[in-house]
Picture (cartoon, rainbow, N blue to C red):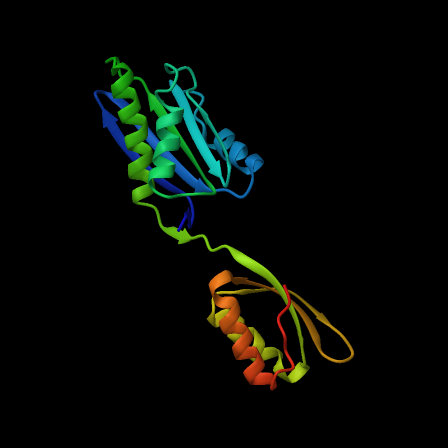
Length: 193
């Protein structure tokens, strides 16, 4: 099950006199990822290398380091931690000692990995869109049942006869919710995909 981050996290490390700061944050779009990278990059640093992953989309940058030694290892760290909807920026201040291509890959990937390991994570749940209608008196119970199953009430529209609801519930919870709603309404509330 993939995870995203609860908020911004940071990890600092010194490797052979080079200082590394890894910053990671949750993102919801490619534009948000680029904005995070631009806002957090330090123009006085030697390199601002980054990677982000958003479902099937991903990007990375070596920012002047030898090809494949920074961006790809950071992206590999994101995938190794089973993260999605995440951007990671690793800032390096050069300390005068060459790390070599293997050392660079280990330093960038390792910093990103340790940053993500220490981060507070949230499980990403894929939800199915559903709709149903209920009476005014049943609304509070319907909302309670949806919340108990980890679902969301996306929209509620009040009508003359009751409330039309747009819901989002995990695939494995749909049958349980249908049974619970039928039980509390004597079969009147029916979920529709």
